[in-house]
Length: 74
Image (cartoon, rainbow, N blue to C red):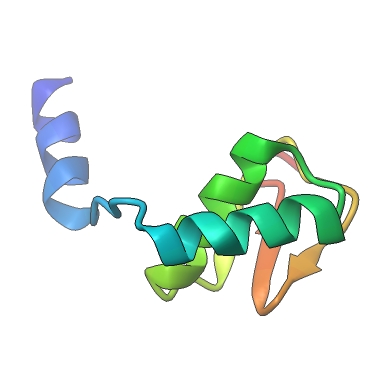
């Protein structure tokens, strides 16, 4: 298990929220009626250049500003 966690850590990027991302999250929260936490995840993913968010909790829209939501369990 430890090696799996270390492998994930080595291949992932930690994105620290900044004021620009927070403002984008506020806009997405209200414009797309998504939860505040989903909006923060979306803003961080977009800032990092991600084009897909894998989640079982897809919001009411399947794509927001070039970031697509995919349920990996379907």
